[in-house]
Length: 290
View 1 (spheres, rainbow, N blue to C red):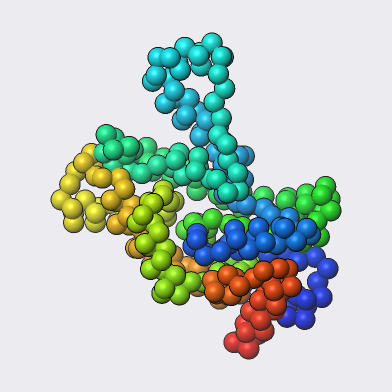
View 2: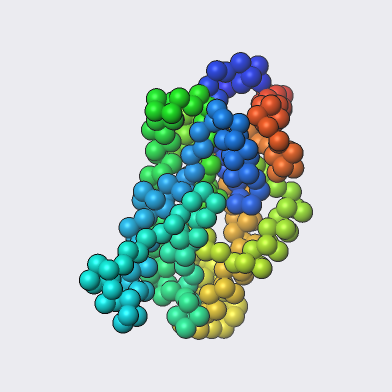
């Protein structure tokens, strides 16, 4: 790993961290806390996806919707209005809205073939954004003079890598650049994530084989055709399975490529000093495991 021990980590003049885990467990919270300390550059993978790699898709989709409205169509064709997405670290809704949900078009659902196409676009975008990590480490130091760096990844990183392959190209690259940190939730956190998602279901990105399996299982269990699927019901039904699907993948990433901290530990971080201690403890615990 980038830091061989707790002492190595504490003494490092340049600290480089990559967070991974389910959305809602504190990745962005602790990233914002460190950024506020003044010496940390915050690189958000989801923000990079939405601005650099999927921005045109998102804008074109919004324009296509506007073209269906005669009043907006005329304004758009005459270059009288501008349509764009207002993505920020705190508001990544344009990315989620573009990904969409499969099912009945009358309920806002996408045809499954179109949904799969957008999923593949997101996968390509996320891999590209992850490969940009080294560029942003260099940019943060060279341009902005930030010695420390945080990479805040999306929940779907585990869908595109094989943590049990020591030659995995993405994980090998990221491990050279950063200390990879899994923010792990317990059963109570899992139930809270499920309750939160049930109240406000949001689009997600899935490994193709997992998506194909759960889609067929849903159609069979609900006895509905693809065109009659309730989009929100499908992603609610899928969410708990997605959590279970991702958990062993995150665990393997932490075991083979990084360290583990708990969501409770992260929730108690109030400043840079607290965070340094949390990571030092995780490195010591990892060393004892071997």
